[in-house]
Image 1 (cartoon, rainbow, N blue to C red):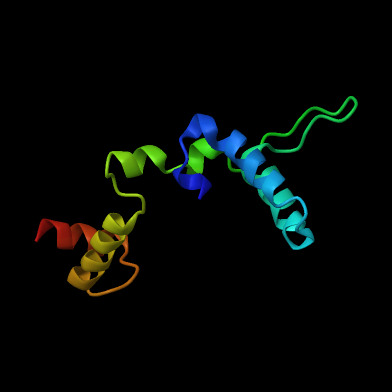
Image 2 (spheres, rainbow, N blue to C red):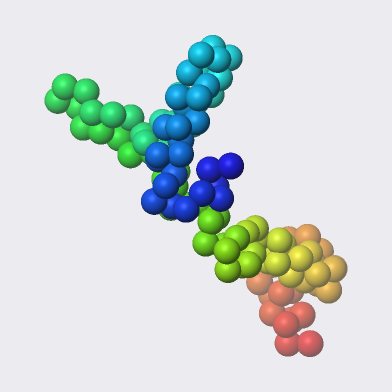
Length: 104
């Protein structure tokens, strides 16, 4: 659900979800993982600097794409690739074969 929350509200919404599920022990490992990997990262400890999340919300948030009705996946490019493979007649055409087909 966080993917469709406005970007500035992702951290606050995650905090709210974490508090709502704080009594559920089954969710603690996944919430910790998601927090470190996707939302807040690893906090600063002593002299060690904070570590940003591996995939910050700016990368995976789809709020604007949903509001503006943009494609949220790469299905359009996948369709083009599949069609091109059919036209070329092979799954991994070399450059020479690809250029020949484009010239046709």
